[in-house]
Image (tube, rainbow, N blue to C red; front, side, top):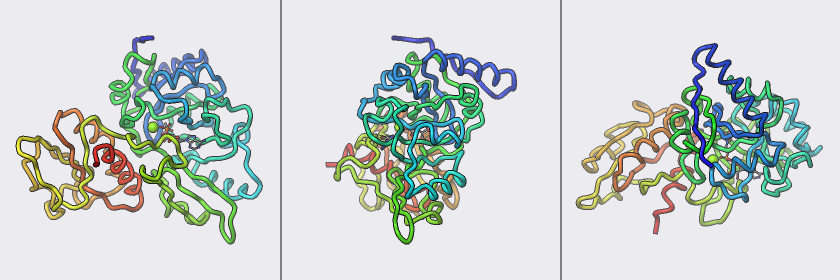
Length: 347
Ligand code: TXA
Ligand code: MG
């Protein structure tokens, strides 16, 4: 089915009210709507309505083995969709108090009310509460959990603006609610919690804005991002081709490994645009885009990360070369995404 995709602004009070009202109306009717969150834009539908959720998979062309994150109107509704095992109840309570609303997703045993299509038949559900003001208004008015994956076509780059959503889903959905650029620019951190002694065990299955350092107060933190070679990770959506631009991308860990090929056009995704990093003068770049000029700040780089990838992808160069970033804090997530994006072209 094709739709006329409307983009509604929220930067003036009356426009904002209209956009919220229209989004709520569509969601009540069992439609999907692209909504801003503090991480990336999401494609939302009533999580308790399997027919509505099916439309998410259709619009994204997402395989149904890949489960969705359930967003709650507020933290008190956790019990509605998830079972909190006694052995981790205190830890869950502390994490929820500290990080919700915000970019942390918890994997917990699901309650029967959550349709199997949401969790791809898994016994667990991924759940979070978004801190985005517009998202909160919409989900608050609807008062239903919303299933929402990132609002891109399956395997493509996550959208951090309404225009990025439009380029992914134009003609496939009724409405995009535009609330400007995403605050964090990277998808939420997904964790699994297990009882442990002396501390509970927190496993990061998808790195994101909430870092191992942020979590270590609450348990023993393990980052378990499986490489593509190891097979699927605990978050089934993280396939090899994920986050991949259409242009071949290469994460160039050492500048000395680069041998430009005659006649090929290259673009550089530079971390901080510093000559001393050894990348700027490797070749006549068709384009250089920086993530965080100067000293290189990881949260700032994160905000621009998907935007820059998308922009470089549009140039039609032969290859995008990416500089490595510092691999701590939010750099863990970006390096993971760069590795996944470049592996498609390795060997
Ligand atoms: O920040 C975010 O998390 C964004 C915004 C829109 O909330 N959403 C997002 O959704 O990134 P998505 O569908 O693009 O990524 C969700 C990831 C997928 O890798 C999926 O496999 C994993 O979460 N996931 C969902 N439910 C799961 C479950 N029950 N067990 C394991 N992994 C799960
Ligand atoms: Mg996604």
